[in-house]
Amino acid sequence: MNLQSFLWEYGAKVPGYDIRVVNEREARAGAGILGMLGMIVIFVGIGFNHIIVARVYLAFLFLDFTARIINPAYSPSLLLGKFFVQNQKPEYVGALQKRFAWTLGWLISLPMLWWFVIHWDINFYKVLICVLCLLLTFLESAFSICVGCMIYKAIVKDDPQHCPGGVCEIRKKEPIQMFSPVQKAITALTMIGLVAGTYLFLAYQEPKTFFGEFLHEAVLTKTQLEKEKDEAYQRALEEEFGEDDE
View 1: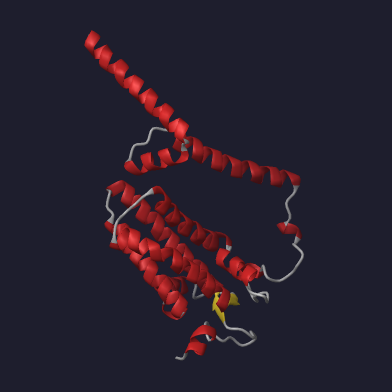
View 2: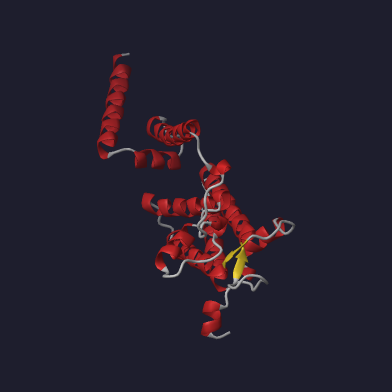
């Protein structure tokens, strides 16, 4: 394989398509598998306080994205996705924009390989990168939203062809895709409720684990943290003096 074929002969040649393509159904299934495994790793890490599962998963993630950008036919997660959707009609999308998106995933997984696999050094901002990676896999698997493909479209001069969900093609929305005023209100309230509920839970519920305390401190401002520490100190003093009085 020469450099030219490596760069441009990426994906599969399918009759009726003038560019090389990949099966979006397999890509979405692979993203869902990676996202599900990531959530399992988080729950196991919190519940059993083991970091080995995170290290194995992140090493797998790096190797999987490496395979994707070289040849998606040999990506473990895409092969698992292919197994589960093999009886579904393929949905072909342009291969180059997917490769660009997977390259961004590889770039995200690269520092995580050093921080968490080779040299374990965790902090809030590094965890945010892991959360970002899971969010991107969720968007792709649940909604067929390929953020990397959007970035690719903004960079290249020519509009990409055959994007996931047909978002590259200019078209008018069907009536079933439109929102009524009531539907808009319900959607907005649901989003606000999810964000507000998550914040209130993390900010005001007493954390029970190290990770819970980590998230609790992350959502509070410096002033709120200082106030909380002062209140905890006052309660400790009151309990101490109460015991002395008895």
